[in-house]
Length: 296
Image (tube, rainbow, N blue to C red):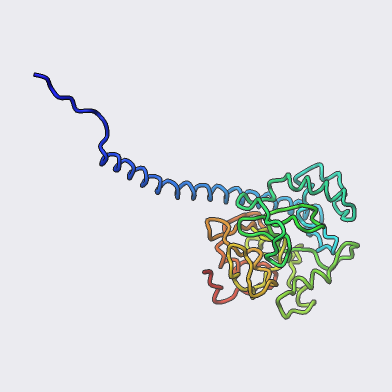
């Protein structure tokens, strides 16, 4: 007798089952891979912040515990001042020379080559866009820069806490009145009150574990106030009802779609919930609001 032979192969039902299993696995793996990538980026960002803080601490050790003052319209930015601590070539340039375009261009080339200035989540700028009151401001996923002449193309992803700057010294480049005016923005403080809020670092009895030094930022520097509002757009940090409040420069959803990273004066860096930004000691007389702002 001749036996019949059944052809080997998958039935339509079997194929659909396999496709369904693959789809389920993809649905499970993609979010897990996304979270792993985001966590890796956050870890790299925290490492950058610790390195930046080390550069600032090195500057302070070389200057009797003080940071630099707030410089005038020909601004020498903080990220330029500490550049020689990361790039030895910068030590051969006059980084205070903001009148010579050639010098600024050389500084810019060196600064842009240092990845420590860039959060891996925000490495590309939004050229020509004004978000936080500055033409060259960034977003949660964009770095600030480079569309200001004084920056000469320099960019970055981090924001310095300007309440740490040195106030009240005689300097050809120092501009206390400009600093005090900027720091009082959005408040009813007068210049004397404003000056009292700056950290006088040497021998100040400072709470080093709660004083922010550098944070994720959509601009290079800021003077946060406890009365600042939560930005209406937490992807950009911009409060559309007004562009003068400084907390908008550090309050946005960059990491895991809900956090920012901050490094503190004692050297530790951590991920901070947005509402907890109002609990940090940004300036010397910080009064934590009660209740804390609500983050949507």
